[in-house]
Length: 251
Image (cartoon, rainbow, N blue to C red; front, top):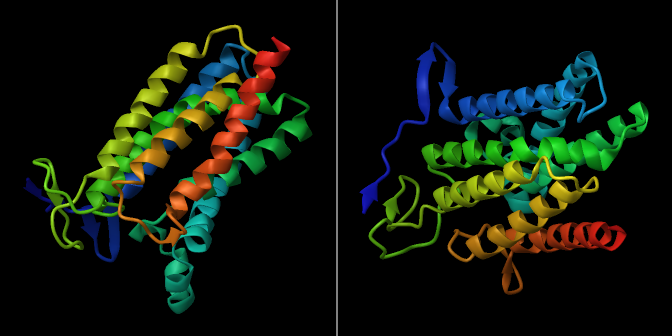
């Protein structure tokens, strides 16, 4: 077992703090942008580089706003009602994957309609590096000492500063399955499949892995016998399964 004593701050300049969590998000955006640029050059995404730059700015804003709103509305509304100033304090951590996903899907759909390109094809390009970006995000959560798991007696249990007892390093479990999802999507990316194929698989695989990981993750609150994370993964799985079913039926 191991005691978590990682410093979430890389360095400080007066009141300015540069944190590992923020660095992980910067790395995520770089990976997504470089992957999307390659897709544009290969004509997998029929937009110009200028349009890609504009889209990335909108997606970054949508991801951060959606992820924060998801955290506030889905996971801890009572805390943020009592502490409204914390709503904008994203440097303290607390970004919901499901909220961020909803945000980028909305912006992506609006962009695709405006540019008259396939929304599902657009999703298939971005969902591959998104899976890898999730790995960086979960590592950031681990360094922050947040989103830890439930109490465990297993030898790899970790004592986090803000938690009692030794806990499952659920952030690392999630980073591991996100890496597996990325590998699967990456090696499927050049197959001749109908648009939406990669998006469908991402939704299905992520929702299944996340659903079962919730059993060892410290729950924010319960909805009946399920955690809020499990509840949010159910419509995600249905959407992905339905998309794959439609693609298979058309094929």
